[in-house]
Length: 119
Image: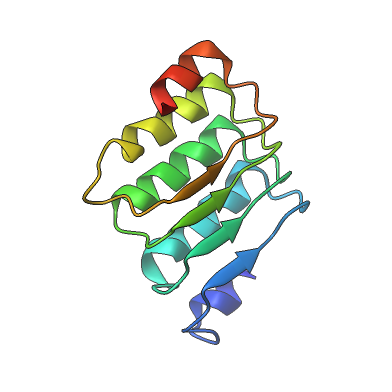
């Protein structure tokens, strides 16, 4: 999938839903790479229940820092935990680079520290 999308078969793609696919952190890494290098118009990314984990959240945070145009990111049930929430909070604080308007984190056990960092 990543190779097909990187090949410019969908240069105007603005929404990608991969929910409930067992991508894991490695699969999310490929998606994060596409956000920066292959899908310049992607505004909505749904990765709910993909087992992204904290490592996957870090990959996504780096992609956003590098200019990914996401406005909506859905990570429900991805097991990102406190560490993943803190990675995303770091990029949310960078108002000039981060275009996110909605971040879905339900069911991720981000704990109090993760909630405080995101807020």
